[in-house]
Image 1 (cartoon, rainbow, N blue to C red):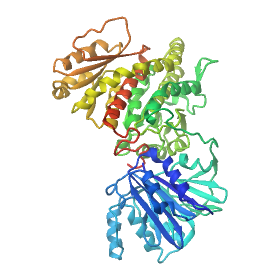
Image 2: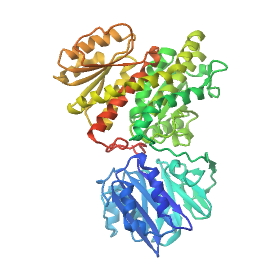
Image 3: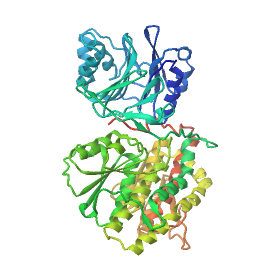
Image 4: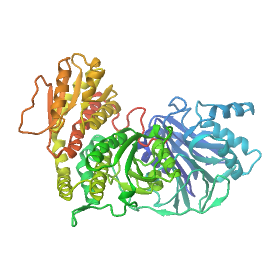
Length: 606
C-alpha cells in the first residue's frame, strides 16, 4: 500500500514519474500526486482516484522540472481526496510518505505553537513542517537526522527542497525503500518493480538509514548521521512486460495461470533424476528442529493453516500457526529448536516483517516463503523458499496462494522424509501424484460456465457461509475471504462441525451456503453437517470431487465436481471454483476486480 518514486536527472522527470506510479498501482491506492522543482519553486499537483486522473491534468503535462517525487496513497489519516493526497509541501519542502507517524498529534500541537499552518488531515504533513522548522537552525543532514529522531512509527520518505535543487533525501524506518542507479540520473522507490523499468542496479536502505541522492552519486547515512557504505545489487535486467492479454482483468488471467504456477514450482523444487525434493541448502540439521511455527496475514495466513494439516500429517513436528499482527504483541516463549516460517506474497507485509524482526533479534531459525526474492522479508530471513509464481497484480491473491500452498506442502514432504516420519515409498508416491497436479488444476478450471450462473444467487443474498472439515476448512476460510474482498458480500468460513455451536442461528430460508465435501476421511461427517443446514432452508452449493459413488444427500441446490486427487492435493482443486465464484460475483456487480475498495496488495503499515 502506498508507493514512492523519486528521480534526480538532467532531463524533465514528470512523464517518467507518472509511468513509474502506474507500475505501483497494483499495491492499492485511492489518490496520487507529483511534485517537481523548477523555476526556483516547488510545483505540486495532486488528484483523487487513479493515476490516469493525475496524468490528464494539464499542470502535470506542463511540468518541466528535472528533479521530482511522486506518490500513490492508501488512506490511513484523513479522507482519500486531493487535499490529503501526497506530496505534502511547504514553501521550502515537499514530502511523500509510506507508513504511519504515531505521535503526529503531539508534533502537530508543537508545530502549530511555532506558527505552522496545516492544510490536510494527514499525519504526513507534520514531517513537512518539522523539517521546515529544523532547517532554520540546521544543515540538510542534521535537519533530517533531527526530524527522524522526533518521529515515532514507521516510514519511507522521499523529500525535495526548494533551496537544495540538486538532491532528493530518502529515509526508512519499517517501510521498505530502495535506491536505483542510472546514467546521469538516480532514483528512489518503494518497490524494485517500479525501478526495474529504469535500472537493474539497486541498493536497499536498512532500518534507520537515510540517503542523499544526487544526479551523479548517492551517499548513505545511519540514524546518527554517520556515512555508511552500501552494496549495489544487480537484479535481472529483463524487463518482463506483464499485461492482461485477452483477459478482462488481471485476476482472471492469474486464476488461469495457476497450472503454470504449479508447474514452475514443481520444476524448481523436484529433482526428477533422483526422485527427490531439491532443498539441499537447508541450513539446519533436522534433529535441531522439533517444532514449527507458521506466520502470515490474510490469504497467507490461510496457506499457513492449510500447511498445519500437512505438517501434522507428514511429520512428527509440533505445529503452531500465528496471525502476524498478533504475534509480536504476545508473550512469546522463543525456543531454539523451533523453525519460524513467514509467508508473504509481497515480502513487505509490515506485520509479518515485524514478527520476523522479533524472531531475528532473538536469534531464532527463520525461513520465508515469498514471491519477491528482493523483498525485505526475503533479505532478512535466514532461509528463503521462493514460490516462483511470477508477477501478481490483482490485489486479491489467487496464484500466489496456490504457490504458497505448494511450497509449504513440498517443505512438509521433505522434512517428513528427512526426519523419517514417512516411508520412502509413500514419499515417492506423493511426488508422483504431485507431478500430476498442474494438469488436474487445468481440468478443474473448466467449471467456468456453471459458476457464472450460480454467482447471481450470492449477489442477491445478504450474506453467505463456507463450510469445510479437515483439509477443506482453510479453503472454506479462503473462499469466504475472496467473496468479501471482491464482491463486498458478508461471508464467513467455519469448520462444518462447529455449525451447531452457534453459527446455525444465522441460517435462514434461501441463504447460500458453500459446503466443501471432497470424498476424503471427513466426507460422511461433512454431508451430515450439510443436512443440518439444508433442513434450515439454506441453498447449498456442494463442491466435491468426481467419483463413481453417488452423493448421499438430498435437496442440494447445486453441485460442482472438481477432479480427483489424493487427499493431500484436493485443497488445490477445491480452491479453483471458489476463486471463480468471487470473480464472477464481482464482475456481475461491476466492481473494480483488480483493485477492490479499501484494500492494498502490499500492506506496509500495521
